[in-house]
Image 1 (tube, rainbow, N blue to C red):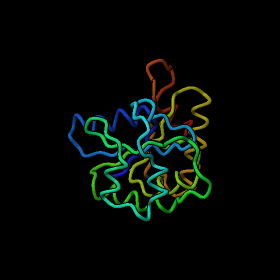
Image 2 (cartoon, rainbow, N blue to C red):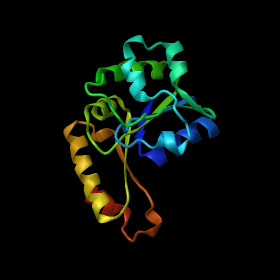
Image 3 (tube, rainbow, N blue to C red):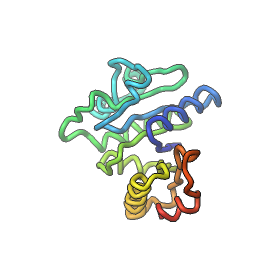
Image 4 (tube, rainbow, N blue to C red):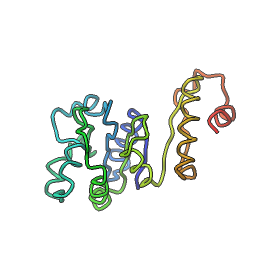
Length: 181
């Protein structure tokens, strides 16, 4: 299974799957312009998703074990140094996902806000997409724009809307659903 989230939700969900439910889980930080998982989990200078993509042709289980960082029971490929090389091998994501499918029950991916080629490739490979928003006006507008793009990509049936920090909002779930479409 492949599931898409936002950073803190992706980390919490991935950790819960790995730790609490004992599900073999991989977390991919695919936000190559602003990834935070390496910092938040204090992973140091371990190999990154960019490294895995750069070595996709040679990627096998031995190299994979050297690249993937561990955080308790959770395996992670973080975004790296946020200096994505030009012409990065986006098709290499197929090899990365192939190895992930063979080794993990669940792969969670944290994507950035952009619909860059890597994000679109991951979205197309995902069984479930969680669009995360808050109930404020600007985030709801952005969620609507992203939902429209996901619909254009033919992925709307895979999308679930997650409303974050709802406790401080007077907006109802129905109003949020209507606003996002």
